[in-house]
Length: 256
Image (cartoon, rainbow, N blue to C red; front, side, top):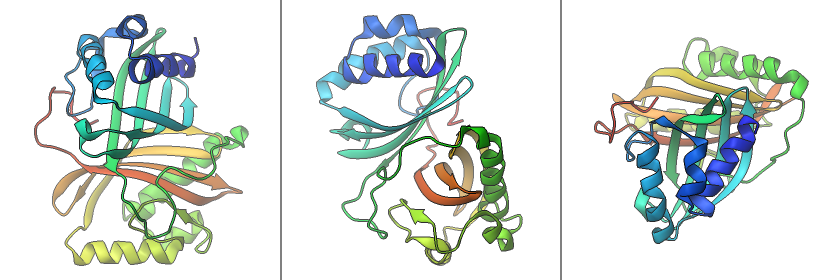
């Protein structure tokens, strides 16, 4: 199986079919887990599958992005109270090696009833295009992350995006550059100033570029999992899932 096929088969076995026996041969025994609530190792995940079934949790996958041995799923979880809220938006990231799934990262965020832009956290375009521009788009987004979000050269923002054409899916931020700048100012007034923004994972396929970053905001550690859509050399759309990194986890692997 390809990395994407392998990941989708594992995900279906765990979250749709609830079949540990189908999931076991797809996992490396020393599977590395970064979800803060689940212990590391294949057996820990396999033991968690019956709990998923009993909870009535369901999942919808909206986007699948594959880059070499890395696969990103953009998901919505329902009946997900076990993870903190009835409805959650999520990014699940998997690494494949030698025909097995060997590592998993994720980020989860409750879905509010309303959003500032009127857009949902997972709706919008899903088709992957411009695969021949993958590397160009990867560099564009990483430049935006470095200069704008990381603060290296925020004055270069219009190099990366059209100020008027920026569809925003973060529930607390409005469309366009004006919406982004207003949100940053509002967050700063609340003491939520970002003082570190370091990309840890980058997965790009065509017009979609995903970046998972370790950040310090308001003096506390946070995880930002962001997805951008690029069109004609400019960023035009953004989805994200943001969560605080807990001090205690069920393993020693860290969030990243």
